[in-house]
Image 1 (spheres, rainbow, N blue to C red):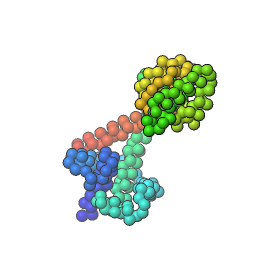
Image 2 (tube, helix red, strand yellow):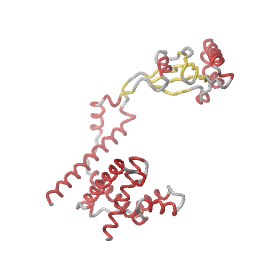
Image 3 (cartoon, one colour):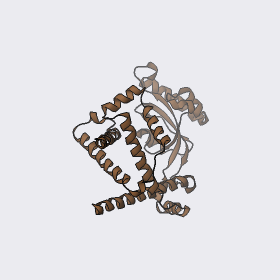
Image 4 (spheres, rainbow, N blue to C red):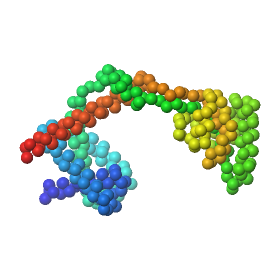
Length: 288
């Protein structure tokens, strides 16, 4: 009976976790195909955890009490008080004791898998450089344009933003900039109706496809340092300033070397975990 109750608590925890992960809802709120999918995945995860915990490598693995308490504290922080926590657990077929046991089980499984992953081969500088060299498509930087803009919105509910009035205002701004392009940031601060006005109209380094199509089409015809003619988008009239152009190119390895190394390390660890689990499953089938 005790063993059955413990397993029921473990499954209830996995059901809750899987349902929230996949659908953002509790298991009780699911039905039909969604409920069936959650139950299938939860039971599969429970079998996998049982397999891992039965391995010889699991014998010496212990979850530190501080680690378990920290995980429980994170769960508690999601609720205003203990009553709400206990009520929610009860609604999902769990008790606090059952939750604690299930989380300790989960943490132990993670620790065992991490232990096996630590056996993965170390990633060397040469490994990183070779990956960078043979996968250039992953390190291509698209062309970007450092862009500022001034926006006057169209709003027929406001007299000063009727289409004709808005067009007259943006044309006046464009005329002043034609005489002195150096005034762009000042004019943006004074007249732009976009929050970027506070930063001189700065949109940042923009790549193709980030802006409205009308703005995108104009921006990528401008030269560095050029201000374009008035252009209309669904929100109003704009004046665009292409401040600088960063051409397409390969990202240097130096600034991203640590991230590439981390990615390769994680990949090797994952391969190591999968290989160990495969051997474990084969050994279990042979013993059966």
